[in-house]
Length: 85
Image (cartoon, rainbow, N blue to C red):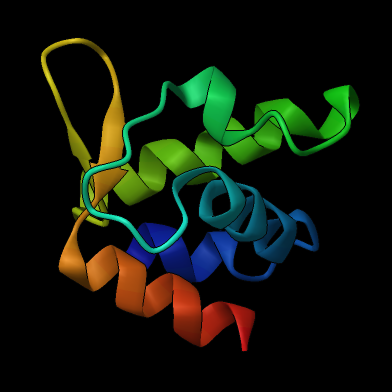
């Protein structure tokens, strides 16, 4: 979790997690592209939010499908709920 530790200190981090959560909700069956996962943020903040998404993929909080879409893993959904409380 070293890469997430550094990202958690950024002010955009919680907003990024919130954007992902808004797009995927509490469903394991909802799929979205990286562009859709960060679309709830202003354009000037989306590049940093994409870094958060990539870190979630690397850690295993988001699962990649062959169609370049992503969905929650159990750990990712639990983590995002904890962050957003």
